[in-house]
Structure formats: structure tokens, C-alpha cells
Image 1 (cartoon, one colour):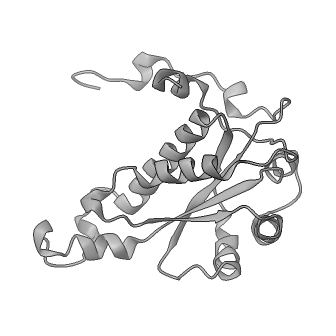
Image 2 (cartoon, helix red, strand yellow):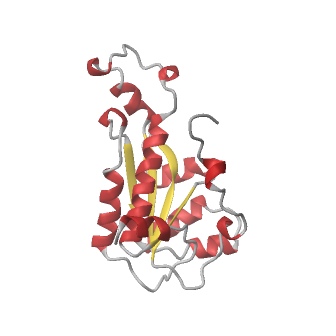
Image 3 (tube, rainbow, N blue to C red):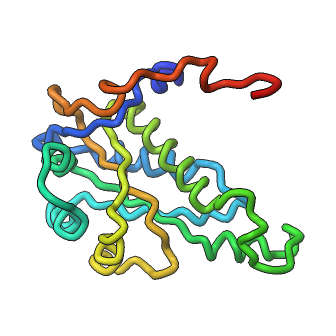
Length: 197
């Protein structure tokens, strides 16, 4: 698929055909794309926890989900969940190495928390790859008060920070409309500033 077409077709899909499994090679392509995203200092501090089995996915929803809703029913139909994690410690360690020139691990040196920036780039690469694989995908967050339970359920190390989850599968034809159906897209002149604000 042409890159421009991938960009135009990318949407957050909230309802999946749960009777249609995702081929393992398509999952692998999405994961490989995520790992090819930029990484500050080539830290490679982003990790992915992939849930493809029904038992693993159900366990996730048991510990991560809040009250039942149409959104949740649609999302629970996803045959694949990719939990995105990042390690702040890995970035602080990497930038304290001699080739980076910092002599300490002070997070105040960072203009932005690149552990989250890189995880966002990895997530977008995965979302674009999903379109290229003719799959639907959606990025969403785990409620803050549920992250500890998810961490415990899957034995995620304490050093890993939850960034979000990518649901993956074939789109159900009658998907749930999201925010783009209710909010207009900003005009180019509202979002792009040339020379000055």
C-alpha cells in the first residue's frame, strides 16, 4: 500500500470481527514496525507485551476495564492486544554514558520525557503498519488506578511505565464512531505556523 494511502486510511477502530483471527505474520509485521521507530540515543527502552490468547486477553479486561459500555464491548472483540511499556531508567542510564556527555541521570536535563516520546512513535509506527496489513487498530490507555493490577497480572517489572494498549484485528463493518465523527478537523492554518505563531 502507498504511504499516502496508509495515512489517509488510518483510523482508531473500536469494534472488531472476533471470528476472524489475525495471521501471525501480520502481527509480526506490526511489532517489527514498532521496533523500527526512532529511539533517542538508540536507547531502545520501549517494550511490547503481546496478548493473543483468549485467556490472556480476558485476564487483561478483568483487571483493566471499568464499567461496561458500548466502547468496551467493541474493544473486547479485538483478537490481539499489544501493551506498550517504556523504561525511564533505561533513558537516564543511556544518557549518563560517556558518548552522551552528561555525567548524571538528572531527568531535569530532558526537554521532554523521551521515554514517552519514543513509545508514542513506536505506537504510531504500529498503527500505520496495521493499516498496511489491512487491519484495524486503536490506541487507548489503561486507567491509572488499574495499571498496578495489569503489571501484577503479567509480571511486568516495576521499572516499566505503562504507555497504553494497541488493539488489533479486522474491523467489524459497523464500527463505533469515535471523536472524529463529532469534532471537525482543524484547518491547516490553525495547526501549522510558518515563520512565527
